[in-house]
Image (cartoon, helix red, strand yellow):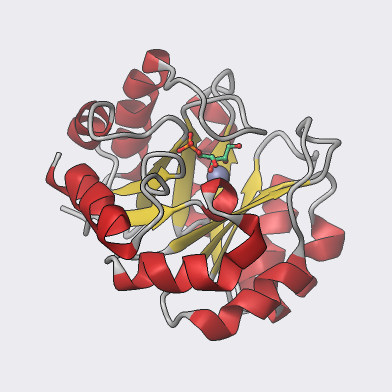
Length: 218
Ligand code: DX5
Ligand code: ZN
């Protein structure tokens, strides 16, 4: 079984003190920091870009798990690599040349991830599965934190787990993940869990630690 990873999404943190929030979830036991980049074009919201990520890099040593909700992604991959992202994940729906995007991420020396919107079938990644280090399954429509988990993605997680087989690929789920929704995902094969609102409630390191542990224990 792949290692369980909890990846707090700082989209749900207090943007007025991002560095402090990154340090707080690190101290609280986060495995990765999940960075949601939105362009107001591929998704109907705008978040932050590579300069903000670069500024956060000094605040923690844990891996940066960067989720690009931008189209096109290719012109910006180098900037996100230079900003200190360890894994760069692109949407299968973001452009016609997914294979090229994944090649480019690995050529930059980074781990390559691919993600699927709730309506996108598993077949979209069948022919690139050997080019990725991570598959991210969206369990909400991307663009906003705090949405309700879409139960219909659970069988999709299981189908992707079967496609991955024994390859060393992380299977991550993102959107509406809580201690209540995580168990079905884990049972279907997910090992990495993005959580925004479920982690960043309470506003203190102790609260974040309890929130992270609740998801991990579930
Ligand atoms: C949605 C983002 C998610 C989101 C998760 O577009 O990709 O990472 O921030 O937030 P919660 O856990 O609140 O659904
Ligand atoms: Zn995300």
